[in-house]
Image 1: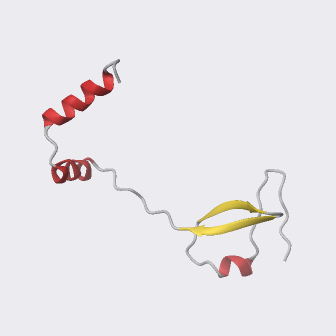
Image 2: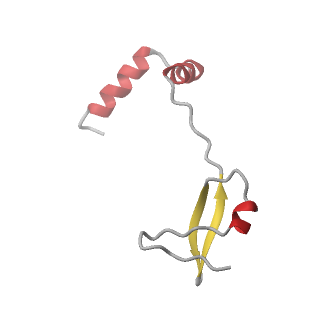
Amino acid sequence: MLAKKTSKNQITLPKEIVRAFPNVEYFDVSIDGNSIRLVPVRITPVPSSLDTIREKIKRLGLTEKDVDEAVEWARSEKR
């Protein structure tokens, strides 16, 4: 199978290859000797809602004082 690189450095994967990887959007791309290697990757979004963050802080047992101290430490010049 041939795939041509476009002027924008894009390559379209042949249908036969795409059919072998249904529901895959992303591939890890690397060089393997004189070959280009594509490995399917499943991206799992990290929950970033404020409620999720608050739940994690509670689970870790952190208090408002702990957060204040961490901010103070991060802002200090003596790190």
